[in-house]
Image (cartoon, rainbow, N blue to C red; front, side, top):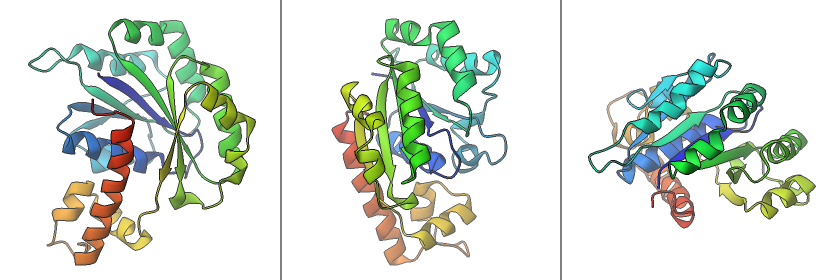
Length: 236
């Protein structure tokens, strides 16, 4: 089943682009076709690391957002639409919600057999809890929700765990994902290379190339994350 994956969190610095990049690498490694869109005009992190798959899109324009839905009109040799990943910039919730409501996006994509997934990437702060509450109150039971506890952005998620926001999300069928922290020095090297995770693992010639055990840590981190995605049936 094809899916539309909005990778959000509504605030900067929670690791949205990292999640988008991991999901992109997952689809690549699972031989699942996908198209990516990057809504961040300042950093374009998703486009920078996965330039062959992602392109920029203007989120506060209906024409720009319409191009995301139009991606599902392309199909493979078996007539199957691709997965779509949208790396959402901070403070994009309002124009996105208007577009979804005015265009009846959930109903249109449901008729096409496409699942809409909202990924709420959270750090350990209260803002992420409040923004999750706003997300589920806005869309209620329209999409599927994945709440990502990003342990690269905090270690104590007790505020989230005990919040009415998470309770409501769980009542709507949300899945909670623990994204382990990747060793900080290794992530900095990958970022300086502007490399995909595959490229970082296999590139040994750059000045910032990962060492033997760094490559192994990235492989282990990816496998652990992939196992979680497999449990959710993302590549089915």
